[in-house]
Length: 307
Image 1 (spheres, rainbow, N blue to C red):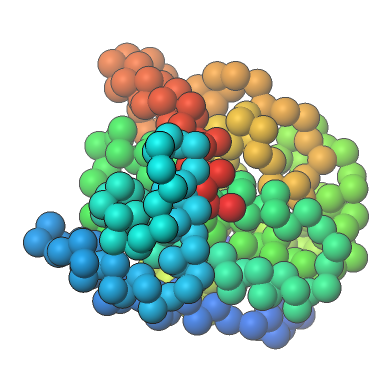
Image 2 (image 1 turned 180 degrees about the horizontal axis):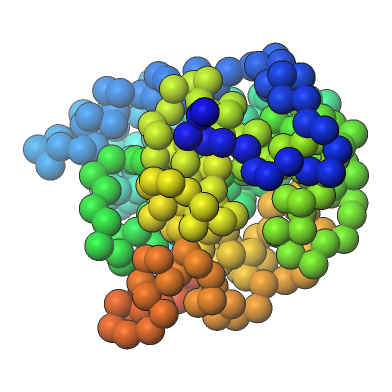
């Protein structure tokens, strides 16, 4: 049995072979396998020169455009507009350059898959939600005991809803029905997806990513981000994504693919994911709450430069 085993069977029989066949027909994302290794290695090195990083960024027009848009956003509050890549690298710093280098090719390929799906859905909302979740997943894990020295945390947050995009390609009518149906909470949305398709977007996304041979941590985070306690391993990644997803919704950035009420303030403190990472109460929880509030304040300006 696969470690990413299905949820309990819905009332109607599930044709897993047909579901897999439809998912397998979706285009693959080359960016998950070839993610600008030269740039990522440079930004990991403290000895890298700004000029070296800028030279690699210049080769990618899309990344260059996002970089300049971000540095000229209100978040940085610069008095004069920056039009030079090297200056932009200096102002942004290695951490945000690294996040940009990861997100840009993935989002671009997801946008191409969106076009191929021909589904008139609120895609910009999904991109904002995904990037915001990536940013907050990284912040949440930085406030936890788990040490992450690569981009696993960022990618887990960025890709946690990739199953919705696959649904738009493989199950367009069912996804439109999900988007239009009012639900009390995200768990009800997942239940509706399982009723209509047999799998929910988390399981669909995890299976899709397994085809790309992504790290096990990312696959588990995507598969169990709605219920991290169900994960047999890598629970903390799933827990962080669950919290990030709630925080982003609270900030008014729903994925646009669900018809659910707004998330109440501090409701994330009751999530299984929060208790798994920080405990129900105590010093760790207090420190984490402060980190989360700070990240939420900065989020709108960061997104203004990215999307």
